Image (cartoon, rainbow, N blue to C red; front, side):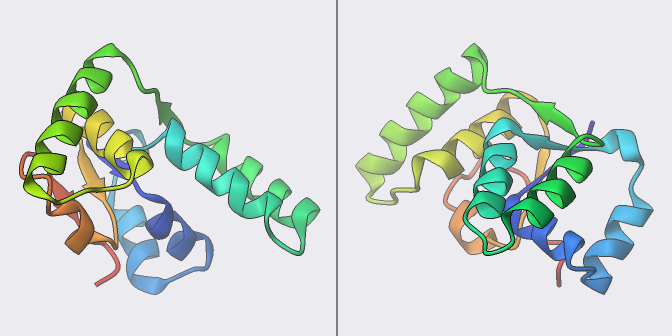
Amino acid sequence: MKYIIDSDILIYFLKNHPKVVNKFAEAEADDIGITIITYAELLFGAYNSLKIKKNLSKIKSFLETMTIVDFDKPAADIFARLKSDLRKEGKIISDMDLIIASICIANQLTLITNNSKHFKRIRELKIENWSI
């Protein structure tokens, strides 16, 4: 695996955003995964929508095809260090996003996100934006 896809990019993909769909098509299926956090965020989006059944069906069907990377001890150690460093620098990031970044760093994966400005605060995180 090479890439972790963030929720915002997955939503673009599910809405058939041409640039994102093309990038997915160019990548090998085995190179793309998501974190357990993104899994939870997508399910929350479905449960929080007006068309819960329809959206849950669509999301769950899609998620069955994805490799899901868990938050483990090495990622937890990175999370704790990064959270402390960012707090000292006054560059706080939400815990969920920091967990996603920590999982990427621990597994040497590139985060694919449309939220580049936010994630650039984490110097050791590799990021790409497939929507531009």
